[in-house]
Image (cartoon, helix red, strand yellow):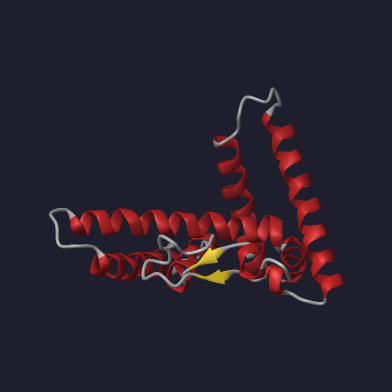
Amino acid sequence: ARHGDALAPAVLGPTLAVGGLALLSGRRWSLPVAAGALAWSTASVRRVLPEAPGRTGLALHLAARGLSWSVRQEAALATRHWWPAALLGALSSRRIRRVVTASLLVDSAIALANRKSDGLDVPTAIAGRRLDDLAYGTGLWWGAWRARSVRVLLPRKSNSPSGRMQPGQPN
């Protein structure tokens, strides 16, 4: 309540959020939908960039980074912030199981790639990450329950054309 939207678990633009979810879904239509989101985002970013050589390439690069961050944030939502709902959904839906599985793989790969030399073997590091996610998500949902508000569970919509944060926008 004190921090408002500053504690949103993710900041996502609608176009890139759809593209990221499509990629995590792993369906036949996923790549065309993600490519469409990437093209739309590239065009949006290009419109706000100043006229300069390489503007289209830069817009594509920024849009691709935005799409990759959307995938990362959505994977974190499924495995950390929203795991209780993801678990319930996965018990009854094959589609949700596919998204949760892809999210676990993406999140684990990112965690391993960013891991410092901690002396842990890979299975232990992954198990530790999952336990940390379970503890964090449990505390988050418990706090939301006690506050009788789901606000802390909801992502915040990015207002920038690319779905990325604008300079001066609060994090």
